[in-house]
Length: 265
Length: 253
Image (cartoon, rainbow over all chains, first blue to last red; front, side, top):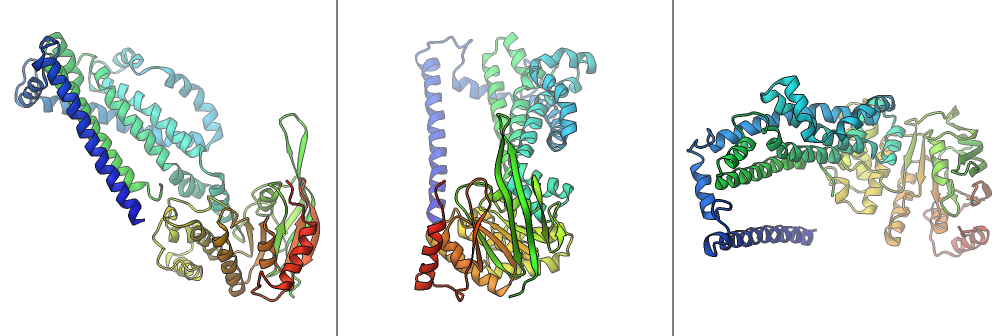
């Protein structure tokens, strides 16, 4: 047990080291291509040094897209979290309910199957018509996207409950309600978290799409505007910020999962 | 011996429909009686019908024909008085050892102090004192089955059904668990129906062995084992019984 723990720790150190090396190599190549050999014009692909400079400046400079970086990030986060939390609040219970109740499954499934086959971008026009050009329409798009992944995983988690676990609980005289809340849901929890993770990734990735509908702030908007302004450095700053915030969100969710999913692996 | 019949199966048959529309008989006309505090071992070849039979007696599956009574009452649905231990994936991985062991009485709404006191008694009895707050994935296969036994005892069932509980353990652990189970059973007598395909295990544990045929399963022959307990698996009497039964035991499957 001690040995395996040490091995685990070693693997973690190894993983971090390899990640650092991988990023360093990537940066060196980028630097070579731009600043050293000048293979690409700075207006198409600025050097990493220039991007870092713009990144730091963007915390105080509002030009040319009208907001500082943190204002863009906060605006995007607000949209994503609103849509995502709503998607979770509807998706998890509905997925569980459909998996548990045959009639509900039969009734809701046809509509859901249609719903899930519409790609994220396909929701943009109708959401604008319903909510107008504002935060609500963007959050609604994020909702539609994250909700699908969250529902499907919650559903399959409940459906995959080990029948032996159900038998054992039944022989202990567990009621139908107890079977659901003390066996099926705890057993499905890892699946439910997989859905929440997928939903969060997709929700955050869809921010660019959602912010393409007339907005005046947000990371997607910032990228769009700076394409029109031909500011490649700020486009890259926007992309890096999307990656960075996405990683932080996943990390926070992982902490929740570690706390609530016990005794697996 | 006490002759009050606790488990009674009368002419149980179970047929599954197959894909091509024909019927597949897994159990045919199976009858058995188990007396109070008797340890009966069902031994038979192959995978045919044994878990199905356990689930029928436990009220989890319905027989195609025939009836089961436990404690004089007809079995129609699962009941806390019928406890079951399965071979694998038995414990709830999301609960600790204590959480697993107290599951039954907790589902019945018993108070925390009362159910945990009893749970602790059986955790101690199976030798897992100190592991109460561990999750099952931190335990070995043998320890996991000990938890399964403590859990079923804590629910204080009238009868225990054990479906090849040691089937996936290595030989060494298996011997140990057989001795342990026998010891626990002598301390806390219960009516037991134990399914296995291991003859040595059957003779070591049983008051009575019921030999079953292969597909469809039905009773082939019964043997009363009246060797003194705990039994020595290398003694002459043990080996003699073993030889006698194995002549009749068709393990081809």
